[in-house]
Amino acid sequence: MADQNNSMTPGDPGAKVDKIDLDELVASSDTGGRTPVGGVGKFLAIVAVSWSLYQLWIASPLPYMVADFIPIPSNSHTRPTHLAFAIFLAFMAYPAMKSSPKDRVPISDWILALVGTACVSYSAVFSDQLADRPGLPTTADLTVSVLGLICLLEATRRALGPPLMIVALIFGSYIFFGEYAPDIISWQGASLNKGMSHLWITQEGVFGIALGVSTAFVFLFVLFGALLDKAGAGNYFIKVAFAALGHLRGGPAKAAVLASAMTGLISGSSIANVVTTGTFTIPLMKRVGFSAEKAGAVEVASSVNGQIMPPVMGAAAFLMVEYVGISYQEVVKHAFLPAVISYIALFYLVDLEAAKNNMKGLPKSGPLRSLMQKVNGFLIGIVVIAALSAITYFGVGWTKEIVSHPVVYEAA
Image (cartoon, rainbow, N blue to C red; front, side):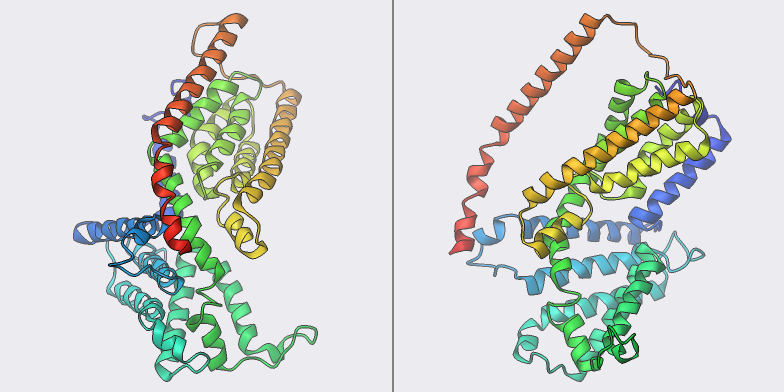
């Protein structure tokens, strides 16, 4: 398949430029785009690994096994710790402006990262004192709350862009200036004490259900998907899609739909999905007759739909579990059918476009096979997958007997 992709050969200068641009796009959306060298780079890597290990620790039964020696962490500690790691890495990894240095971390970002981390950690360190004075914040409480909220908004702007920060500011201003809102939604407005108590000091605002979902579920699923992608799962999905559909009419576009659907199983990022699959599919779609606009539209639509493909689905599924009170299995079951239908619709539209323009597929790289050989190969594949599934199930299934016992300690 690589031999057929003449649009992206290593010797093509345009391909090198495109590859650099794509790498920068992925880095800016997933890891911030900043690549500090030397000790700072190693330090950030250690912080990221420490965050992952901490999340695995609180999600495992180990805290219950050592509860006699180490107190079991509660929501008042795990949620601020989770956000502290996130806000520190946000300031360290995401530059403030496009013109900001990307090979080093300025002093101003160090200061913002430390201030933001300290403000977030405040509610965990002084959780007992804050619980003793609900609704009666001190001057220190208010100062930390205001600084922490400002740092959180700035971290949001850097990581996700100005739109989300502006939306947060609009709704935040409604808390304090509700009397200036339209009559149908106007209200008296909250004081600084009441507003900051709700937003920062208690577990009803920043440290509420959404952060709890991110702490308990979303991080683990995103970590699992990232590990699979780095292990080569994304490239494997692309190859499977092209092997199955590349030879059909408009094959690259159909392969793009299937590859994006499979990548959506492990990816929580639409941008990463577009770049991962689009690097290969868009040039090949153009090669068989799709215009640049239609090729890009097919890839973007397929990758965006990956957000509703279980099991990751960003954070939406887990927020539904917490707010609506239904099980995660129910969310996955009801999300799977719409996701499949959306991809069937995309597949059908692509086929119509290919038929209308009399497009051909990519030539097969291997020798022609008879129908019986195809059936035999399909059956052998099913047998191999079943055997691997059985080995995995019976090989590691015994661990369920071990990890299920600590639930007794939690219930007790």
